[in-house]
Length: 110
Length: 114
Image 1 (tube, rainbow over the protein chains, first blue to last red):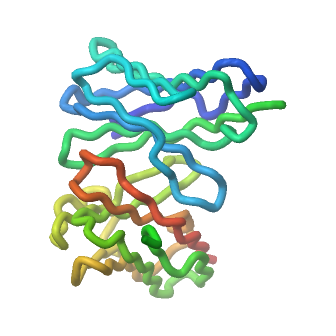
Image 2: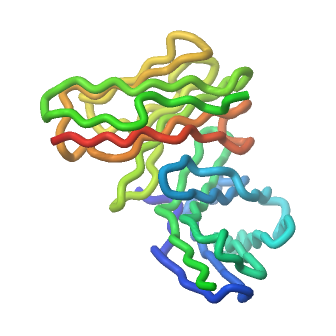
């Protein structure tokens, strides 16, 4: 069963605009959420995280929003840069294991 | 630190052969994870270890897959016999504590079973 879902397999945005990547989860026991970024031929790298006791966490151009009632989180990148083009994975954990979404391929066009 | 090390980076084998993937976690990390990435299913957790002990192997697809962690600095994922549908990129990741902190991924092993 897919406990973490990223329903958009791809997203294309113009450089300088905002990129919004979405993620939904089903398990209410998840209490920590992470976003990973993956370039081709490399392993995923940690980008940003958020605890379930918060609804927003910001790190430079990257902000993650959490809506617990909707079991939804999103990653905002603003302004988007061509170097942000990668596959983004959403992940959720309850301290026992971690489940990943299928990923969203972001393309930022110059 | 060199990060998580995986070998080989690429493996091409014929159906029915045994395949062994290797992983060296980051020194000091006590949790190790094996993932498989495919186009259809994205990134799937296969198994994870905490302090060298397998905690959850429910993601292992079938008995042809097995994983071991004989010590804190080495783990293997074995497929015997391999099948074409096993073709995927296999990632190993490690963290200081299971799940809670960000996992550090290796570069992956791209497996092709002909």
